[in-house]
Image 1 (cartoon, rainbow, N blue to C red):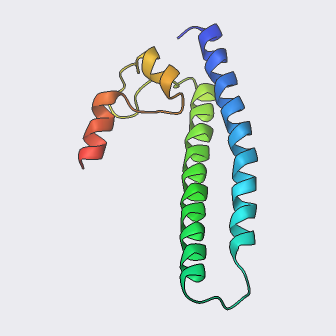
Image 2: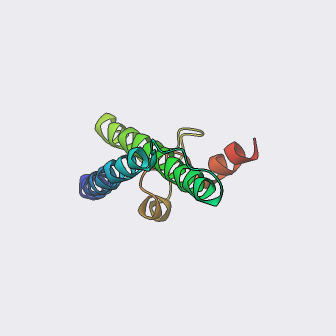
Length: 115
C-alpha cells in the first residue's frame, strides 16, 4: 500500500475515532443519568431497565470499535496495516474502505465467526 493511501486510511480512522469518542461520551453520560435513585415499579421500571440495557450495549459496542480503531492505527505505525493477521495476505482495498478497522481478510473473518 502506498503512503498516500495509508495516510488516507489513517485520517479516516482518526476522524471515525474522534466522532465515536464524542458519541461514546454522550452515551456513557446517558447511561449514568438513566440510573435513578427512585424506587419505580411496574411498567415504568421495566421500560427504564430496557433503556439501560440498550444504552449499555451501545456503550460496549462503541468501546469494542474504539479498540479496533486503536489497533488499526497501531498497525499503520508498525507498517502492518492492510495485512491479514490470520493468513498474512493483503486485505482487499474495497474491504478496508468499507471497514477501515478490520484486521482480517474475509476468509479468515468467516473462519473466526464459524468458530
